[in-house]
Every structure is written in structure tokens, then in C-alpha cells.
Length: 97
Image 1 (cartoon, helix red, strand yellow):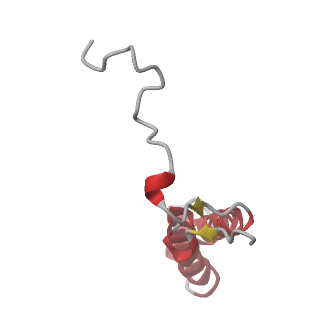
Image 2: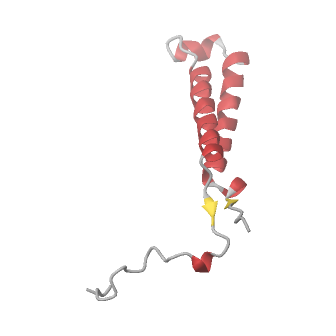
């Protein structure tokens, strides 16, 4: 019988971070393309800050989503069967010092 692996999917924090940063990036990209006024450009020495921040944030969000998709977090079927990472490997050492 083959063992099926379960992934975190939508509950992976990279998906949430990538989605939010990507959404904010798209909003800034939209504002930079369609709502850039001369007064805003003059404040930033002629640089369209919303456009560039939107491009960078959108690329960053896509990178996070790709990372979550290409290297998913595998969730064990039975959490009780996994070893406790806080447990000491050597039973002779005491945690109290």
C-alpha cells in the first residue's frame, strides 16, 4: 500500500504571505500605471515609486507562491508518531542543569 503525503496547502504561511504581498503589489502597480499624478512624481524626484514598489512586491509575492508550490510542507498523518524536537537525545542529561 502506498503512503500518500499530505501537504499544508493553503495553511502554509508562505501561501498567505505571498498572496498578501502579491495583492498589495498589484494594487500599487495599478496605482503607478493609472493614477500617477505630476505632483506625486515631483515629490519623488520624477520616479514613479508606486510603480516600482508594485513591480517588486508582485515579483516577491509570485516567488513566495512558487516556493510554496514547488517545495510544499509535508504534514504527517499521525502527529503523535513523529519525534518531539524538544526532547533531549541523551537521556542522561537533565534539562534543569
